[in-house]
Amino acid sequence: MSKRAQRAAAVEAWADAVEPSDLVEVDRSVLRTIAELAEQRESIDVALAAAVRAARKNGRSWSEIGAMLGVTKQAAQRKYGHPTAA
Image (cartoon, rainbow, N blue to C red; front, side):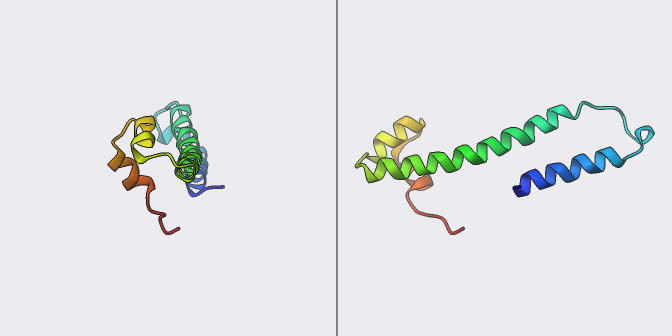
């Protein structure tokens, strides 16, 4: 489970433990949706970085990659050109 998922679970557990009379009733599904989408974004970011690396290994230019991402070649290279320390 990712850190974001752990935080979301902790917030939900806290919300379940709070006395209903202490809170105004809200729809928690919207927050759950945000957490789920954030999880999906993390997976997509990893897959996208792998696809960019594969494109570069196959000789694709930063201009081509940038065009596919909807950014300039400089923005694509800045984001994906150098491996980041994990």
